[in-house]
Image (cartoon, rainbow, N blue to C red; front, side):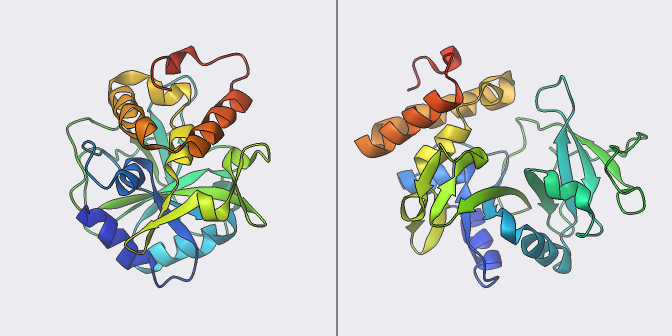
Length: 245
């Protein structure tokens, strides 16, 4: 098992919240083998625990940033440093990024920008604005940074994209390998089924590898759930997934 997974588990296991390794590393936990190289590390927590998770990282010295995508671009983001978790702006964001103290990943290139803040950002706390564009030549070796995704839970169901029509029982949504939780592969592939994951030289090859490696390993019930979730989300078709599902 990749050492970044073990490091993430050691970091979060005593926090007292539910979490799951997701993204490409989550798929590798399901497959039980390495599938490809990785340019990021993803962990899912539930929205009700977002303040606790982010405060925990801040208390441990991890600078944390709220992210939003620059309109009209692909894989180009702006980051706002989170100095105060009571600021309501970042509560609307689907994820945050935290960097291990002293770690400077090449892919971040956090160059300060002279830009205005979004209208709903608090200028007294969100004063650091950065740009980011991932590069294919930087690979995860240790847990240098974490992308936290904030997911939805309704009762005993995991609700993808906060859409009650795309729900999964919790015991099927979060699985375990060697006591470490990870998001079910069909849910990860659902998130990867969007056009954004099939565009650009950075994302598309990774998405194709993931689908081709994992689809044959899914049981029929998991495949059915994935296809139904995709059909609900893209009722007009999803030609960009031809050949992968």
